[in-house]
Image (tube, rainbow, N blue to C red; front, side, top):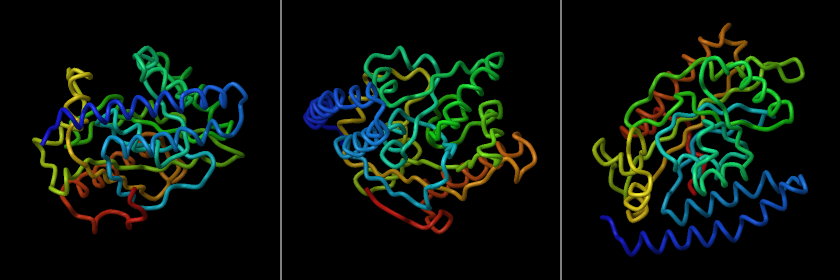
Length: 269
């Protein structure tokens, strides 16, 4: 199942592709041209192919500007999968900015780094609002950490405080999104094999990447659920619970092989 030769080939190809596109994004950011929002999506699409990820997108991606995408989180792979589908900036914990290579890539994608301790909630909300006012879509992982991919952790309502922002007098559009790693070389990826793709807890990053990248082709289901707003629920906590419940149902349906319980298929990449 795992091939060291495949792993080495993919790592070299990934590195070559990354360093080939990196200067273009640096220039686009420096000149503040619109290309800076398009290069990351193109970059992630190719990365997914290099790594061997087949993406099944279901439902319609919100076209409202801006949109706050609320997504469950189980792996660093989520960044490339979501980045290949959505033109937007990620919201990440501040520590990511200091990670070797990944921190640089995150900054080049205009990631918003936040300190998720409660006493900084107001400051973080203001920074996220500033990005929404600029028309940027934001991708937020409200669990606050990654899970094992088999279950969804509670969503932190404080992280959805930005959902109360009103763009041109209207509540910001919020779209719940479910992501699940479901198959390996066409075979169902069961509970015990899903951690090959999920990265969580005290797992070592380097060894996890080496093992994962040497595997075959994985199928990832990404379900875009109907967009909502805080005005429909009356409070941020109610909105948070709705997003949690619908995302959890989407993940459960995807890993259990129940496509009838998911939005209609829209694309496979």
